[in-house]
Image (cartoon, rainbow, N blue to C red):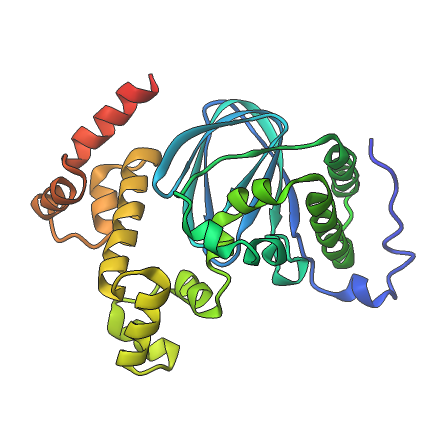
Length: 286
């Protein structure tokens, strides 16, 4: 049984009158469940307290994460968790104020980051973080709702992570977010899933077409049109391999006109039809 909290006695506190904010959230999941994280607006940090899961995030599929590991889910990513053992976790919806992505550390090594191949790997939850996570879990279980608590704890976490993990560990772990440190890159990542094409993207940015294309090519290394095609392919492949959705539903979600159109697209982009891709994935996992 949790401890008694005195919210009613402290009801005049200005912070208690603020809308409820849950940067930290505790979840439990049963073996066999699939969890879809739709973190289109902010990055997420997931601290696995117990259990195991196969995690698919964008182009990375069925990466094993387990108890006492933390996982970083970048902004605008498609992330699906297949729970293979009863699990519990604390999830943090990060804020810019928390500086949780270690931008100051990463920006010193931007040239190093640009040379790295994309990867998706966890970090061990070191002993110093265990007490921190237990304090959050205790407060949440007791029904604590103070928004200031969440913000303070996020900043405390940033301090602990910087203190107990090397720059090399943090740079690799947070690489997707460090790469998007530039304001224009962050704008692209936050909005590319909702715009209908390059022209709408340009209009939203407030730049001229030539300025938008030039800035985009400098930061992303390719044209906006080609980049958006590549991003779409990542999300389509993720939906086929990681979600328990019918091929027909996926086809409609991504606005393919008919099954033959979708089949041609998949064979061109991935070298196989949707059903063949899904069949190969199942064989690989088993």
